[in-house]
Figure (cartoon, rainbow, N blue to C red):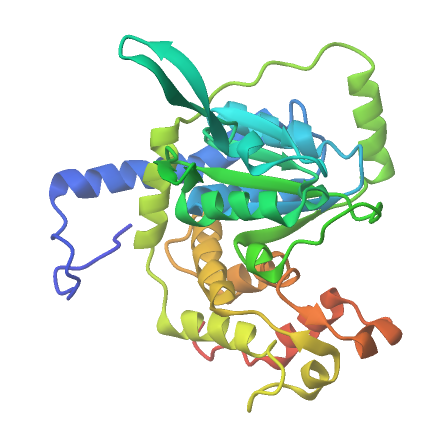
Length: 349
């Protein structure tokens, strides 16, 4: 698998045999690791294969995920299990209406030191690799803003001082779509920082029977740590080097742009039902996610199917419907399905 050629005009240093060998080893670890990851997760998680794939794709390219689902669907268990197989430092933060920014970023306390009494910064739970932000829509905007800085800048600010977070850093946030009383809807700026909005639904009957049988019998099996934080950072570098044809990038950009109302190429149904569409980040995340999915499938190039399969988790939280769509019972999923049919597929995918 070759990512660059000697004729490449990239400003990066040319590939040496040693660096090429390292990249090939990373490719093999990632492609073979997907089956091992799914096998480990199957020890504690039944079904939810599409959810697991989307979260793993986000982690392998450095994106954050918003997980939407009803209570009792093992959202917390899934995140904790992923942290175990990646051997990442894990922290769970329960978001509540009285949670303050200092509760998650950390605060300064007065301590006795050799130099006398002084204020010492005590890091909060955000200083970890994998953060489970449980019920993120239950905390006020001020605390949401502190999390937004960590997600975007990989740092926190306390008492006017900036403290960098140690990579890799991921936020997997959950929200309950049922109970809306006492919640603070996430602003569009923060929603846009999430790579995917993953929908976790109820299991089929046979899978639910398997869950009940397993959880009422023996204790859950221990999970094996398959990777390290260093491996995850190598995967991030590897994904950036996967080649993607210009036609595929153009297709991803047009798919996102078609969701924006009142533009020259916007279809009529978008102008009719959509109040706000997806921004540039949607195209970026479509391409990045498609690269990881291609590697998972054993391919060294991005195909149309890779982009189309990720259109729903990338776009569903970036398209804001208007009152007319709500009155006519039009869902965001319906808009995305129409977009996939409306935007022309590249002639040479």
